Length: 516
Ligand SMILES: Nc1ncnc2c1ncn2[C@@H]1O[C@H](COP(=O)(O)OP(=O)(O)O)[C@@H](O)[C@H]1O
Ligand SMILES: C[C@@](O)(CCOP(=O)(O)OP(=O)(O)O)CC(=O)O
Image (cartoon, rainbow, N blue to C red):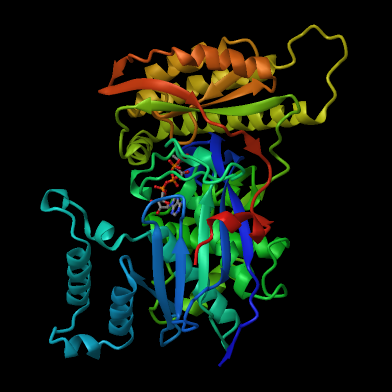
């Protein structure tokens, strides 16, 4: 079998997201969501594996060097019956364990030799116990699940399985060479304080485990799955089979990333986050969830042909309108992170249940909100594409303010009727107060809403940002208790909208972070 020995390092980045309009509605194909990509990106660099000994296994090593203990090693092999590439996590601790696990995966009789009866759960149990024993913390700290014992990263493992399967289906005669992958995320994805390892480093060392990182909700897993998948495809495939700068390349990347992201999440969301990671800011209509229902699991017979058909065929019915969304010159988005004591789980489930049980009321509300969201997108586009009348003393943003305000009224109706804190009273107070600051056009609770974030549309002027920071500095730090949730500090994230989706990067950018 040939091997692709002359592989060159590659790097790709993809943006985070904010769903400014269409939360809940976008779950239904009859409606759309207005999503802005952000200038906070997740970068993935891939290169041939560097070994001291020159001996390489069929191994892919993934590292997230900004975090502690964030390295995952995977073995891979071709399965039978059109099942694609199976990926197995090899190690969390050290090479002897990796080799143990690799041998047991490739040759199960090794475990028999160890006099352990073979069943998948026993193999799993044995490996977990083995690793637990080797890394055992004091008994008092042992409350981790199986996942944390193996330190699994389902998004990486799943994206790797789907991408390698797709790659090997395009190049069945070429063995997949081992590689080393590094992930680097922009600061705004996490609110943990970080330090640059060198004065000029763009990325920060957060010095915590990934599981202890405080996410700011910008869609890290979608940006990661997209840039990770794109990096693998660009690295292993020649340009005539995958070109990230072509329309078809983006379509394949979008469909593959949506599929593996849904599999890793274990649910089918609307996928607006993957769409914006690939295409950047857009008006998004989701794919039919039924598309994914006939896909077998990885390694199962016909997985490869069904995956290829799904990714490349014309069944995928997502609609992405990039031209329908623009940010007028002179305006920008600001994201605020709200520190809060708790989050209400199951908001989506509860809203959809209410919609199902109250078809008439919900139907009217959904239609009204869709209309409001379309007006919002149209007004942004109008402002972005028409020259304002000269000497007009009329506030050119009056219409935008009114649209945002009436859309918020509808969101509050949804919130009250479904009894889900989409725009709960503390967020109403915060949004109202911010909207009165000079230069602030208005704001909403992004995505599913809740207590933890707001997004504001403001005039892109330094003095507006200064006024906003001043007002937020003392925002009810002592908090108001609502539904058992205590609102704490409100911080401004260092991000703004960006129209650009996934893009190639220079692999040399990450030299400081790459270890052998
Ligand atoms: N920098 C990173 N390196 C490796 N994995 C990451 C990184 N950032 C996020 N992830 C993966 O994404 C998961 C977070 O995804 P999720 O809970 O869906 O949050 P989000 O809303 O940010 O997408 C993490 O548990 C981890 O598996
Ligand atoms: C309710 C939704 O329509 C929007 C949720 O948007 P968020 O931005 O709140 O999502 P997370 O990144 O998963 O926290 C669900 C969906 O579209 O999948």
